[in-house]
Image (cartoon, rainbow, N blue to C red; front, side):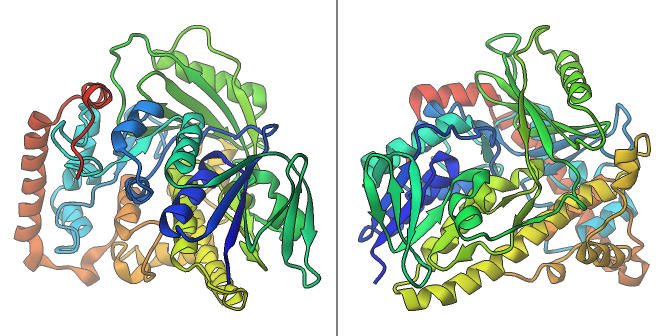
Length: 506
């Protein structure tokens, strides 16, 4: 029987996995080994709404999370200069579904009736909340409940410390701060134990690799290769920096802003105490010095200080492992793969991986191979869908000002190319994404597709009988936006209230 689980590596991936496993399986011994010599990357600052369910599942107080992780609300993403590079080039990918989604063909009637209004602005209230700096809930709304759907922005370093404290004090996870010096194997090839410098050999039945990009167990020990996606998604570098607000009462953006540059894009994330800003770029198209100059120019243009710290350089090989579960070892987090931070999929994949592992945890070694095959199939599919979705942003751009943007319209993954052919005559729908738990729903594809200026010829799928119902939904969205703008508090004001007074428990 499977009794002992050993997690190698802390950070967000390790401690989220430990928390879910310990909360769901109180009869198991959960041990986490974290080297004091290896600092976490600490720049994954955006989450999806799924994080609310994850934190609630492991028993975390949302108010405590806000207080200890410098957290703020995230209601989606805003894309600047992705379509044609102009100053007015902007669209939203909100977390709320379009009004009338599933009832009428929203894109068809938007294009027929209101083509001059940005798709998300017509179909969703959330872009208006973001533009006006509104929070997605009220002070009286209970923990994890929402008025508008939301995820979080957070300080990744503080988040790891917060999760560790919760796992140790509330969930009984055994913590070993030590360095793994060797991996000991059974004769059949399974991992038997991990040799540590100070605590000797730590035995386990299942080992979870959360060692980041070094992938100590799956990549180095088992030799499972990384399938590079550099030929599809070109970005392989990032410069990250933290900058202060101009004043203590400066507005906190409740969306991630992504502003396209000559050979990449800049993220801008607002936390209560600072902004996290970074330039993601392709090193084969731009030098580090040029990328830094673009980052500094962006910070100056957006009200940042004249002097900023030296940005931190990060390099990565975009791709995912050929397998994620090998024998009695499963990789979660950066050890399993990383593409790029666009659309904040990294922590979401961690959540999905930890949840599937916990839900389908094998009882015996014999059952483990069956679960492993299912896990590998599920996450191979999910990584491929992440690649399709991210590439969609680049493929649809009309920018031709640099080789980076011109080249990005080529090298389209086969499945994405097929979908784009179908979408010439209809909108993205559930029939395109048939798995029970898709990474991105059809609505997300609609927001990007039509936000980027794509137009479908709906003549073959025309539904004129829905026209009046669709217009009613558009009017409903506009009325709801007016009501919510009047009722929802300022983003910073609500966060301040939560820190002082907390939120009602559900």
